[in-house]
Image 1 (cartoon, rainbow, N blue to C red):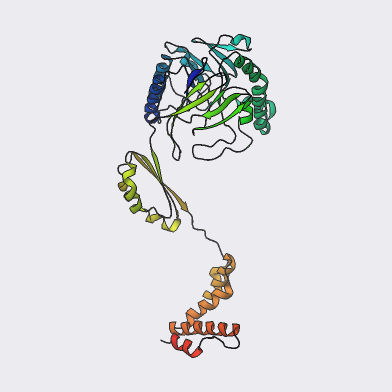
Image 2: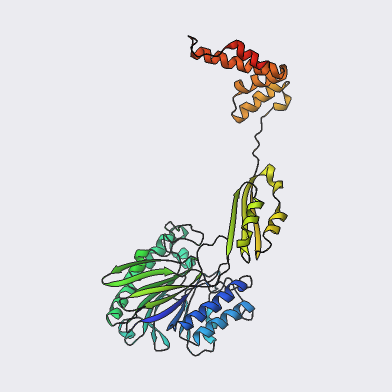
Length: 435
């Protein structure tokens, strides 16, 4: 890609989710990503939130591995770490990275504002004049604490208030500075962690509704060339050209695949950002393969065996739904044996319960026809159709039943064609019934 004279190349990593349970997946993926970013000679590395999956002790293997990756990246270029979801990254935990010994600085961003990169040093700024000589200006929107809004506007108004506050921030605070620094030839970037309305989740579900942090219009209003967003694990992007500048909004998605049903490739983004231009490249990581077999009814073990060769080393999930009375027919042992070459097998069955309806007083009725009539009444059945057939079964032999049915068919046909044209021969009908 062509880069502007004052352009910067930025590696964006997001949603690493380091934890003891995920380390086997995200560790190798992050090793590959950092190696590719260094090989691409990026100027800056930005982590857009959820670097950990839960609170971690500083001495835990998962946290220590994450520190090594950040340190390796910071030995190559300046690094910015954005605060993600508080349940994943407790407030203050990321500040431990400020103590990492590395060639370049590691800047933790857990407050809303604008920060500029001067040479190898990050500096918070409040005006365009303060940005003169900067290599890059970043407008930061880390995870916003909704509890503060609940206290001031009430829980029922938080979603609307959040959108209004962020839209006002983009257009009223960030945009004037970004327009001015862009005129100086300085690249501008927005970094955020949250949901863009209309985005797709990693399972393909659209994020519709009014309760999301960002709208595309609000993000574009910040007047940044690139908007680097974290939180959703599926890579996706949007772009437009406005006032002669290219604006792109993108999620890199998660670095690895940690949940069943996640679609699409996993990786990170390498951005080329100039004052008026913007582009990115998606770089895939060696995330694990996940394969789903879905069945309506019992799993077809023969089909699974026929396709098992493609599941070697993969994480395989067998999904089925089955009526309660047939649940015992599912041979889980055979399924696991057929998928013995898989890394892991999950059998996820949905049992559809048998629906039983009570017919009050049915046990006190004297005869079976009366009980059947009550059952029809409770279930919406046609008692006038069912009860005569039951009485016929109780009182007649098979030959008589057949003859009676055929006679009924003949009478019905004759009533529809009273002149007899094309009507069957009743004697033949009865004779057939007595064969």
